[in-house]
Image 1 (tube, one colour):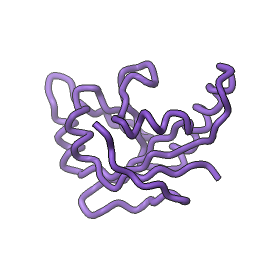
Image 2 (cartoon, rainbow, N blue to C red):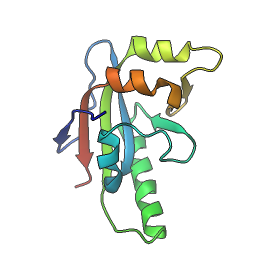
Image 3 (cartoon, rainbow, N blue to C red):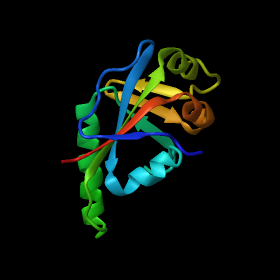
Length: 132
């Protein structure tokens, strides 16, 4: 399931009405797999993480870049995947039983694999910004 996106020179931080703007920081080599469908196993914990603070996402991207260097993988750039998600969808994810599809933390959201299909169908205004 491919995600439609645009590439932007700077991160758009404003969301459309009724939505929350979320950001996922990563290494540029992972962007291709993200737009093919958000992966819940890439980080090793079976969840997809996103934050409403684009600066936190840049910090995460920086850590991903450092991990690539330590693993002797080819250098790349940091990247941000930004998207809008309707507030009603976030609320629905939190209300799932017996285990919520979304856990809210101080610095972001942890999406479980169970929400994958709905998440892919509900995200909008997807943009990718690469480190300059």
